[in-house]
Image (tube, rainbow, N blue to C red; front, side, top):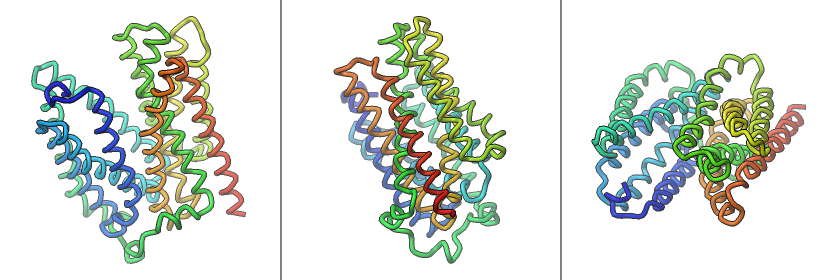
Length: 361
């Protein structure tokens, strides 16, 4: 892409940053938008906007066009994320929340395959984006066609009460516990995205694994996370959100320690990536699902939007920070770096639990 568009390879980071900025803005505005349109219509429109943006990517002929199209794409992505998470948190069980997020992993696995097939067939990267945009169009059509079903279910269309004034950010932050859950989301997404971005580099540069093999092994984390979310759906209702979070963080830390300890056998580090993925699987959906219980259903929509903003902030800024630090320390710092954020996640979730328990007394 960078060769055809006449730009530098590293400029891909600018597109990513623009998308991330859009998701943060959309998350903070999600309460206001969903109150006016309802979860169903909001999601349907956002999916259509995302499809049009992907179509725009497929027809881009200059780098500035990618940057421009990234703005509505980021806004659409953030809106979809916040609206769906809020809807499922309010009206479905922990099981459904876990499965909702499992399909993120399915999409994350399928999209590179679509692009890879387009490139192998000599059809160009444009065909890859076009194919995904058409899939998004089909999903958008299905979303609009299903709007009557959303209205029949609770929360599908805004009630008079829901159409009231959106909760200002300042007011949401004053609710006890919100200032604890934000760094928890920040820390989790820091671990998730840093692991995804830097796992292969760590395996190649520090563990000495050949690049072609490391690329395959680097997918162990996402694979473990996807499988973990499907399996977690079967036990989430039994154990509850709080126990799922605690158990998952314990598994995460175990996986990081397996990567961190300098075993001579590479298989230990590879197994650690898989275990880290399995542990990471249910943290995000469980914290989201517990929001109405922790802060009240009437506050959930606004707080989930703020949580999404915290999550995107962690996933946007922390992975590049590791790259900057690694310039001076080497990539060996990688497991220690994500270990620190895993500990922050554990600390913030436990403090949140204590705060919520005190509020209920």
